[in-house]
Length: 104
Image (cartoon, rainbow, N blue to C red; front, side, top):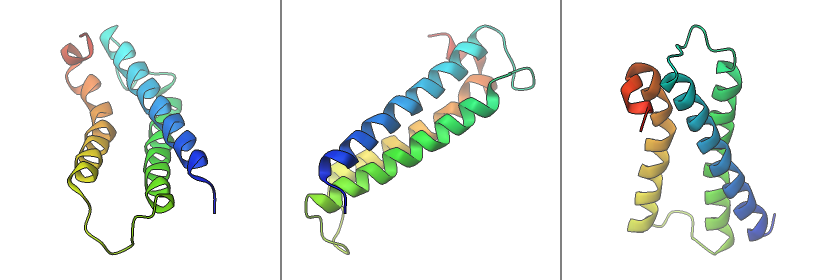
């Protein structure tokens, strides 16, 4: 098994990748770009997906390392983090559908 620090670094790298991908898509959409003309769509999509996966793996790896027991109920703070993860994983769809939301 890997140490807790490894999972924490994996988690932080995933967060950085996720936000870089969201920022790249939002910048492209805010400048009037569309999905069809995006030259970096594949790169941004893969960075977003890998980032989301690293967040998930790193987070649950840290839970295992701090002694969270398999089969026990999730505490409230963990449910909040999972909901935030789901929202951030889906938010990349918004800039092309509603370009006005990409500007702020």
